[in-house]
Length: 591
Image (cartoon, rainbow, N blue to C red; front, top):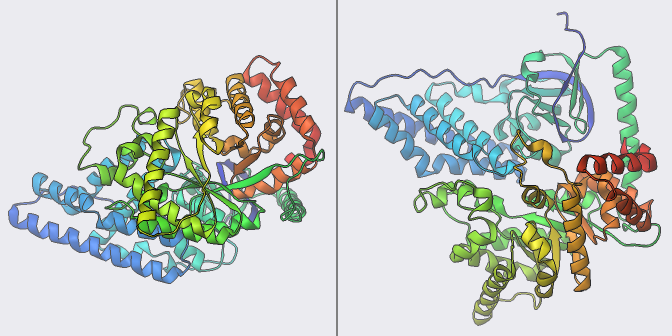
């Protein structure tokens, strides 16, 4: 079959690496569902039984897939989350209610419930949680296909796949990814939809498999067997490349491999500038299974351990024991390296199942509503379970506890008071915990930034959360396409805020790190060190390059770059200046 001419598609680079292979098309078009009117109560009862049987079958299928994977990692956690969705009474009851009230078939009812739930997730301000709407869709589609008797369509294992296959699909469920990877011939993923926090992206990064998501029309533009060149860092997919393009790609891939080997040599070396300023490079994480990759990339510790995954897609809240076991596993795996665990950073808008029965209304602006530390201080039982779990785990490693979204001293003192109460309870019960656990805060609101001198007197460290600090400082929703162009990390207001936070922290004798996306941008590394930050926390894969940059520069260069940068008037001017200076200084490394 003659293949189309070469074309280049662009998406989001979700997992780095350059790979060449043949397209394997996975058709995941939604099953066609027709609305059917039921005749009477007898048929309603039969339809409800069909629904319950399909839910049970779907659950058994996920158990079987989980058993086949045997990796105990991201796949197991994700598949278990899908099982919890199936078992959630709210899901089943909503569908049964539609069947009984509207006299419609089960397939139609399931689709209606899924649409409603996806719409709820779509409203969430955080990208990670918005991506979970895809999980609702995957679960609903499994139930619908089982209702239609199309269970075989859900099994990618029946497909014959050649070596060096690059899977191309509109979207990939965790079950699809798990079973496809089990074949041992998948070298890359390309999807029409998805973002950096979609499950296929998380799994691809954990398995070091190049992945490009959000391409838009890959499943339409690519045909089975097409030769593909996938660059998971640049987010590019070249379809049916010319001979010249293939040779150029292979040379670039070889250079990348050699560069990674050179960077790997630095893994166990400290990050020290040539004028002897020490900087700690830490990793952001959310699953225990990420620890091997964190250590492999040379992280000196974990600067941000997001605990929200413990709360997602379940019928109840995590117990103290679940908190303890999750944190203990990571602390033990990291040994003496510091592990900074952030307490719950979500609110009622992101806990639909736990809160639905008690909280019917939706917050009009959840980003500025009852979330993070505000929510925890209101839901004290929930907060106490996490605090006790953290304290119990503290004896197993080098734990640091961090409170998010602090806006002033009153919140910090109240949170510390809750922690003290947890310590007193454990002491009375004879349960051991570390004699001293450092307590810090996320500085991610303008209020916290400009009260940093006061806050520094009552905590042990700061971590600047630039994602929210930029959003709140510039009064823009970075997820809103209409104003996203205004999201500028190098805006003078942001730089001045961070500078003040660093000065306040150092005046009080405490350390300050940065854990937002800005921290992992290589072009900003020297500028951030020029500000005096003690640590940067980022995705593990970003650490080697940032380490190489900082080990070949001086902190004084960073200070001079900062002073020259802030003389410019606009965020665009500052950004252009900084990138040009970094390109001139580190051109080959930043390619």
